[in-house]
Each structure stands twice: as structure tokens, then as C-alpha cells.
Length: 123
Image 1 (cartoon, helix red, strand yellow):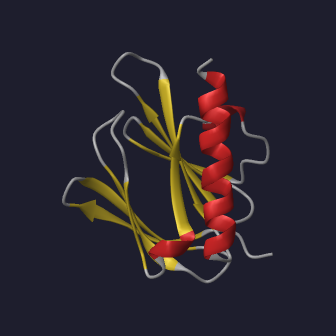
Image 2 (spheres, one colour):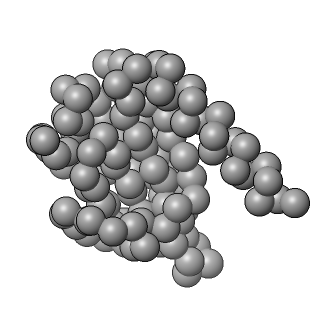
Image 3 (tube, one colour):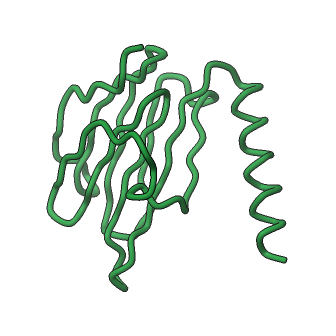
């Protein structure tokens, strides 16, 4: 399976941007903003992309590639997943997980499952 391919690393109006091609063939740009802030994801198929905050990328097995831009660590993982890890202002890591799905049904199912897990974890 083809992994994430970064086609360029250019300056973004808000910081850095990474142009990517996901294994499913989707193309787009991830804009990295200030540390600890959300990233901007643009794609040619937005209905197939979901962005999640929370999982620490350093704990995820199978990291294929790591590139450091200042204090921003960007990780590329196997499959249709891209995780960008920021060093937050309080010194803790904040991760944003961008996942590319094969269908809108898969995307909605995952988003619903994450919402259920989050709600249950809040007590």
C-alpha cells in the first residue's frame, strides 16, 4: 500500500503548509498554525476527511517518517492517516489526527464512534 507522500513543504499564510497525497489518491494541503492551535486541512474531497484532536502521536506505533519544522513535529502514519503533533504553550504535546476515508459512510461512522467514546470518558 502506498503511504502518505508529501509533495512540498511551503510557507502557508498562517505558518507552514504541507501538500499531501493520501494512499487513496486524495490530494490536499495541511496548514500548520501556531503551536497548540488547530490545523487547516484542505482537500479535493472534504466529505471524506475528518479531523480529530487529542491522541498523542508519540504513543502511536508504526511511525514511518518524522520531519521537524521548528517546534512542530509532523508524523506520517501507515494507512489513510496523518497526525500532526504540536508542542503546546504549556509544554505538553497536542496532536491533531487527520484521517482520510474511502467513503462518507465510513467517515460518519468513525466520527460517531469518537463522539460516543469522548462522551463516555467525560463521565
